Length: 145
Image 1: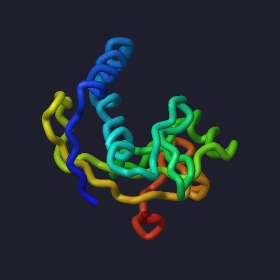
Image 2: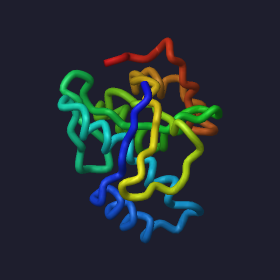
Image 3: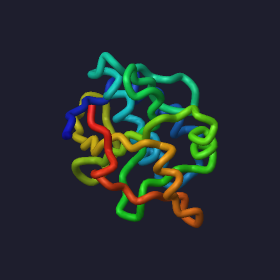
């Protein structure tokens, strides 16, 4: 499902703080990728932000969700997040992608993203490629809400 989101001043401010502490190439790409979880909490009354790094949101029906960016190479799940799944702290991955090529987000400028679906996190990590920490996304295995 396609969504239109307008990055708020609050989102851009916290993104900029994270970018300032990040030494990776193109840190805006990584921190802009938090917009879908923020936006879902703004528009979905069943979802609230989680304040820890362990997962992104808490959904009244699905439980704890960690949002993951879709990639043709597979959806990446870090070792730390895999541990959270194994410990029972994450129930689903919300898989999404930008509707167009990523450009640095700007306050008040609308962007679009597609929420592809919610994947059972335990099932996903059972199928993870240990060399790449990626699993292949499959629409058939998604839960829609």
